[in-house]
Length: 288
Image 1 (cartoon, rainbow, N blue to C red):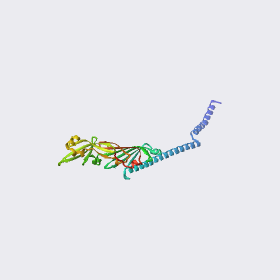
Image 2: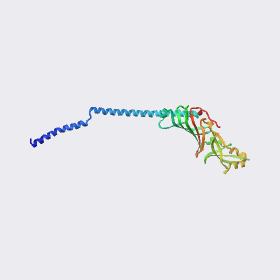
Image 3: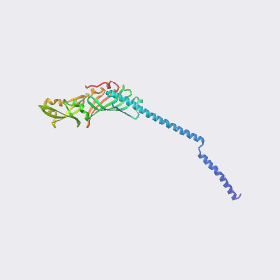
Image 4: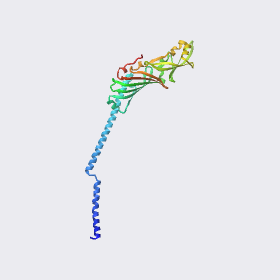
């Protein structure tokens, strides 16, 4: 066979082989019906898993929302009953921790903060904040710890006027950790003005008010010096007085401290291992 004939034969073999090779590559790139069915099953399975996960998340969100609503209603109702408030009196409830639903499942709330604005206590009006920890769902069972902070704004201190001195007082203000007020007295038709600063303290359920500073007609004067000058006339103005707070509040609450801030009087009470639904929060206290 000549070289020319041989080359012609090789070209014909290559031409026949090339379509066969291309056909093999094309067959390798195309998915078989079995592969396509397998891919569809995987996609469907992934879709089902994602749908179930979404449903579980949605159910958890809904359940958490319902748990918070019911917990808020339970606590707010109990607080209104304890302090004899109207049904529409605002009571704000916040829960400590991420999941209230999980806490309810355990039978106890980790912590609760309750805000009661404009709460009347005798002649006073102020904002009450309750911070409780270890609160059982069964309110007849004891709550681990509770603190109540009652804040009275400077402008609402007029309710204390009858407890600060034995006469009419005016211009009650907070200054330099003291409660200051104006008053006065008369001798033989002559009027004298007094500005008295009293320090509040706690005494067996009472708020006690002790005179610490006095201005007599604009001049600072010692308490004993004023007594020696005017005798018994000024005694009703200078004697320490008190205000029984606990007889106006549930007996479970113990008066622990009082502080004079720049713009408010802060009264702190506490209770431990006391049931919110028990007699300690159903009965008023008393002063020793």
